[in-house]
Image (cartoon, rainbow, N blue to C red; front, side, top):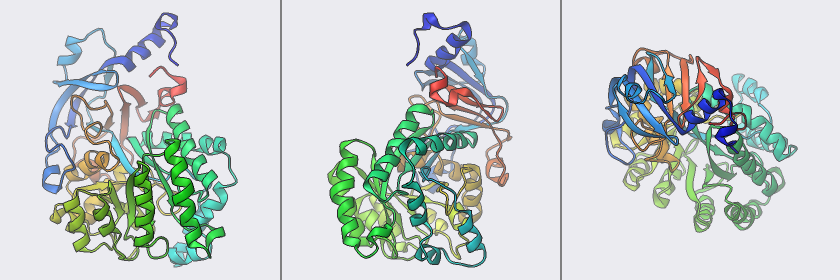
Length: 448
């Protein structure tokens, strides 16, 4: 709870006022994404990043109320706290629409096996992969999960991301899935990073149900989903629709149960085998279908017609050393709305670096810098049900901004693998300054 302003010191009061009302300025290039259709955008609609040179925004209660020239708003509001982003590139804060941040331990031993040529599927068959994470997570309490999750959230801020979709899915039992989602909710109350919770109990068949798939599906449909919906622990339900995990029919059954309980639906689809997960996403008009490495052109066209956002995860295919990658160029040519994500997780993509993901998207899929940025902000926001509220620098949007030590937008994907984030602002509150995390990133240590 914020103390009464009369009890705050001068310094504390200025920080409190900054959270309520402030001005943010920068003299470099701003990629605002302010112009274009209101819904998810295709490649041609993302080509214009709405660039301006030098700008300032007025912020009240975390939202942008006005955007103007760099010097205009500081001159009109001289009494308000001023956040100066300097002369570098300014963009909307990255929106990462596919992450798995709740886990018990890293899996570097599996990485070493893959580097020696052992396939991902073989590691999973031997009890590694997701089931390995599940066994470890079940040994932890909700408080222990929270203790690990909060510093992981710091890493997203340091890489310029201001909102993530946060999946469960490493518990695979009712109590551990509930604990994972409760930890996400608790972390959202403790940390300024926005975390949009998704239930992914259908991530794998746990050890105790390996000979009783139907039994686990009944637990998902009859026990987990109703409790999660009742306790409002998640906004969406995801399923790993894959040949070695859940079939199309099983996925449909789980997702329809989730929808009946008021949850939006999403899919891990056609990452390893082309079994029709993308087609199911189109049939159900899912928020998104993700991975899509071997999705058919027909199913991709159906996704486009159904308005399903395609989330591409190029860091995952690189890290797993897959022979192929998602047909990103075909998706762009088809007119699909494409989003980008890190797939941050302990087994197949332990990175929070969205700038790296943009570089890979340009290299692998032929995206321009503007298209990649739009896929990582505007379209990513729509993929998690936040379209029209984040992902652009415009009146009515959250004041989520990232400033880079870069001269222009083209340099963002050009600089490969480096973190050039200098400043990050979350809802009008500066959480990263000069590349360093500020106490304001933790809600329990600030008045922002």
